[in-house]
Length: 113
Image (tube, rainbow, N blue to C red; front, side, top):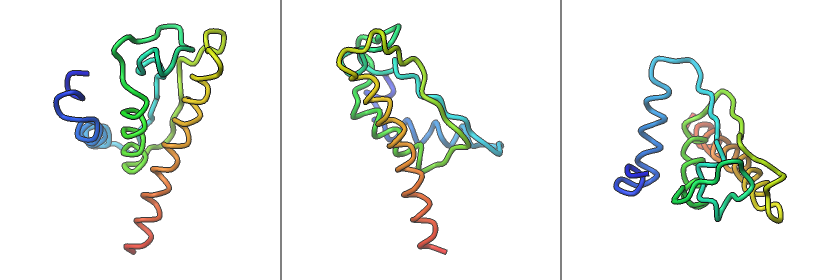
């Protein structure tokens, strides 16, 4: 979290994706929903006080999508602890933002060809 606070989610995510893609043919992305502060994702087995905000995660996911990935999953959603479906909706948003970022990059690449 210190890197995110000091450098911003965009810079940290871009660097992580550059490292992940170095010398490899594929990147598997796991979004562990308990990276979020418990206020944004109460339906997890280990809520994280002081975790990321939903806005920070959305920003990171768009960047991840733009860099590309081979496959992804969303982990640590625990419906039995989910108050009003908050975490389930957040997990659905995770999927949407990853795919939207990937689609935006694909469309951008097609325009430059």
